[in-house]
Image 1: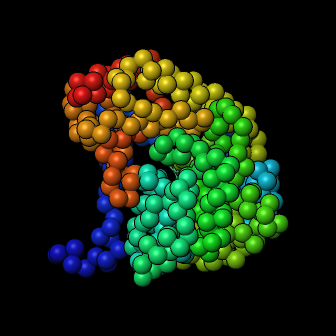
Image 2 (image 1 turned 135 degrees about the vertical axis):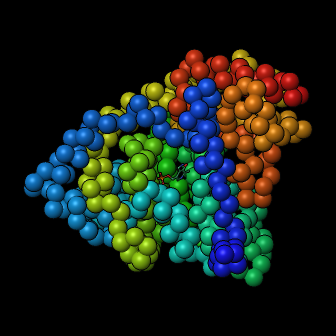
Image 3 (image 1 turned 90 degrees about the vertical axis):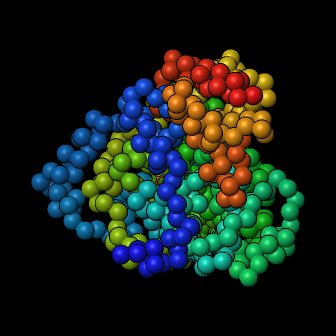
Length: 401
Ligand code: PMP
């Protein structure tokens, strides 16, 4: 059967993720991998989860834990998130929170909710590859969100052509892939631009809790609430996740925003998967309540040490002409190579001769540019291997130059 003939048109934009393909390489023991931006499994609070699951499966809780539950999400978990959001300057109630299966599902739902084919999504150049993957299914156009330029709202609107600009999407803190953080002025500017264009703002806060140094910046949604006085009057939708703090395998994330949007997303959730795993939400709620802050403090120490090791190694081993970001948190450092170099070609030779993996940067650009860039993750490699891997990479780049 010729399946391509009957696949819906939306599939044509959905390519296999380069990163997913690369993750397969992590199984080869001799590869030093800076590719996957995933948490270090040695840092999972495994014992706390053992207890939490045992408690959820105890005689008094198992009828709840193994049963269907409400689409909005496990109420005690939503209440815990309300506390976290309020502490971030986002006063809200349970009705402003929808639990999703990872924040990835929130991105899919937001694409489904907001994008008709041909509408425009404003995204960073580069941006989170998984966001492009989620939105692609809804057949949007992409335009470059660049709050640092004074590009006018009219100009953005005009570039949208037949469709309409629907939202601006940003990974705000220690972004995937660059490690950069959007400063206060740019956060305000994005709200201004969204007001002028009358569009939504999707604030992807997946790494927000992983700040190693410097002062925390209040979220875009907190700034918008400060302007308008009420979350239900806001256009920003905040996407949070437990993947980088507690455990990605349980697939628990959330969206926080105006009730009107959350209610509509609940309908999407009902239609798609009814609700996120009850027992996983219960386990997350228990572990978060018992030790979120202390656990996050512990993992930040570990990741900070690895970031420092990678920055030292880059200083020591990279040839002149290569530049990189200095993230204040998160998991990523972004490299720019001299324009003559192609990071995808370098990866192929690196895997052959140096056995070092990274992600070529062009995958993160909606227009396929950025061939001289690469993303390095420091989250899963110890200091010694970081130095060794960066030394090999430095040699390879120097030779290519
Ligand atoms: N947003 C960003 C910026 C990410 O890096 C990731 C994970 N790589 C996600 C969202 C999705 O994470 P999850 O679905 O596990 O919450």
